[in-house]
Image 1 (tube, rainbow, N blue to C red):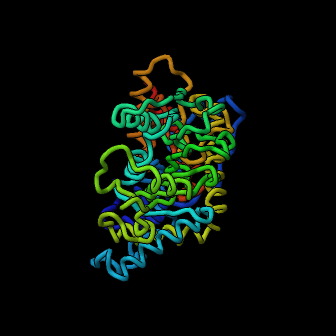
Image 2: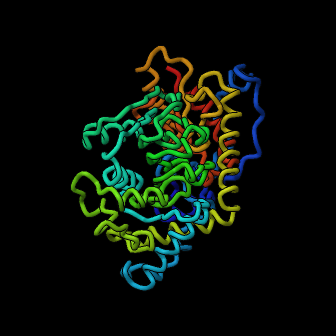
Image 3: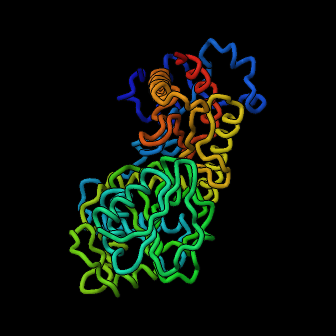
Length: 422
């Protein structure tokens, strides 16, 4: 299917690999029909679009590599060396410092590399910090529900839980400022994000623990309102999996040092020793052995992020991608945004649902057929809705995706919808 993918993977990722003998080029755009009115082109569409996305990578994790990425760009000097060596520690510390700089973290905030991706970072925070005061859990999609499960069933906390269905946000008003709060900034499986942090009390006594994995590097996160933030490398900048990132505010550090966790902690969750923060974690002295290959790949991703203007450039790229996809959605009558309210609609993990939801089993079959067909055509990879979400599509629009590829994708989605009619 991939015309020698295994030997030319870098060419595929950068959009230079021809599919089925056809060279790939960026889109020049497509006319957009009137909202909810089928154009004649759609009604009579019988042939495949001629223009494929140059890079058909739209997975919501692991996400697309940065444009122009290739393995031969990776600096090999730290490979095969100890992560405790002078060179290894220097590369890890550089990754930490540059990540914090791109995110524009406030003074006094610490950032560390931890095991087990975003999940590991969140578990470390919850197990280390929760339990000594009330906690409010906010959940509106699968991963938020996962944190609720951990809090209630594993940590046995008497938590207040505020929930909302897919496509909506729970009530964010009136949360007790003495309560700790656990929430996702951007719901990866529902395409719903918090519009801002105005609902978080600036004079709170509790801590905010935020799973920001699909919002970091793509959305304007108000870090002054976040005491603990987590994300993984394999999301918005297209890094590799397995490594998590933990951001701590001075208030979070104070809590860690003042209030020991009310439970035993395994080694990979321990952030303090003798009542003091293990500061080395935030200076490149990782708890366990990281992949130096993944570290070097992350440094490449940071190179690219800086080259497009840092955080403002990354946000602008994600916004442009989401807008391009939204323009196509407005012209379609068979699919719509899962998040009906634009203010809470994600610009990264854009989730779409079929407009006709009268037959869930048929929609499940059609989603599966569309995803399979588009992958066979090398037009789009990994765009099925999350397994627990309403049937439809999920298309990553983060900064590492090119807007031209989003524009080229739309006609393929229309074609696949027509081709998979029962």
